[in-house]
Length: 218
Image 1 (spheres, rainbow, N blue to C red):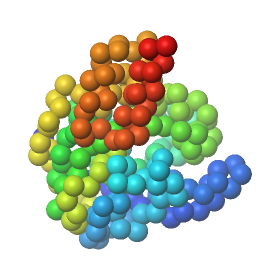
Image 2 (cartoon, rainbow, N blue to C red):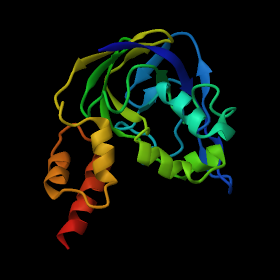
Image 3 (tube, rainbow, N blue to C red):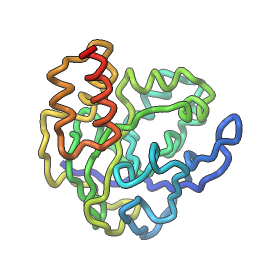
């Protein structure tokens, strides 16, 4: 299972939200050889490394495959969706999607090795970016959320490099399945318990799943 990087994007922390909240959500495409370290791609800043960065969420990947569908469903956003990076992603490619990839997948990204730690948890920033607060719900319902990588082996990456699946320890846990379970109004307890036990799942999503479990037990 292999594809190629279409675009690489990085962002700088700036005033972003309606009250000037700091964020590096706005990304710009870059070319040339870039370093990948434990906290992500060189030059990419993160205003909040607890919720939108850190080791478990070092790099955000979003499928460019989804853009055409979004433009068809929301033609008023066609201009905003004309180029990769609209969803705040670092990596854009075609062929890899939430249905095809799994939690824990180890992937060669240029010369680096990364691992899928969780799906993207949409927040208000998506609604602010598109001027449509309903985008957060739409992204969750369609499971077109994107996914995060932790960096297992630092390296370098550039536009056009291969992205290749190297190992799949949890083939039963697609990113889409995990997204669906965590947002299901009536999730199965056994499934939530199994998800919390995945060693490669991010700490934030383990906590998310545990909170849902705790509510079921009350």
